[in-house]
Length: 194
Length: 57
Image (tube, rainbow over all chains, first blue to last red; front, side, top):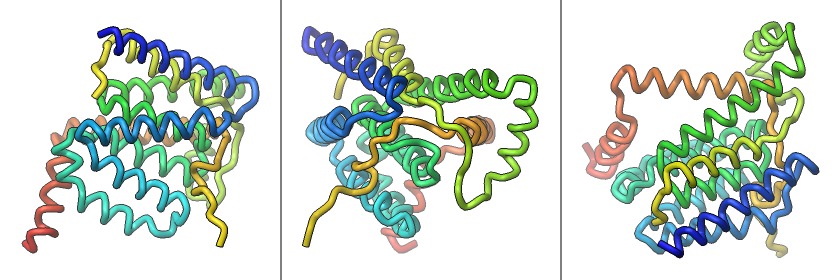
């Protein structure tokens, strides 16, 4: 119980720090994103979720060679029974979605690593929903603030131009949304660590 | 040979492309809701596909 509370405070502090750094600098040092991701992945693996290690290697492989994505899909389908048996479906889906968004240059690497860390620690669909809702809501607020009355026109133009090879647009901080989702999940639902 | 970190681990950027993020976010939410409404359990489908591939039928 006490360990859980200490970990909650550590995770909360980490979430606040990366959100503040994102707002101030637009980037987060790898020292604040890679070690937590490695610890969360190893923690999950040590507590029976070893399939996440295979997913981790796959994510790194696809990030390095995005052209090999069909191989990644085949591998994920191949290990899916184990992923499902170990209760890691939500973590797998979150990892795949954020990887796709990173390959499309929609999300930054720090956002992806933070989302992967949270999903590895808490493979819970409620957290996944919170992340999607907070991310989308914050994007919507910033979008409406920037474009005002012409927001609908810009939205339609963006939807039409989705097939462009190179994504274009304004960049806004995403980690605050992720941090809010993580903090709400931690302190409202009090999840048990694996 | 020099070992280098994978691209994802090297990337320190912490920002999203808000315009496309909104459109893709909407697509993700609509897709999940549609799948829920249609009653398709993706995990079951993937497990069956994997079993068919590994089991050879």
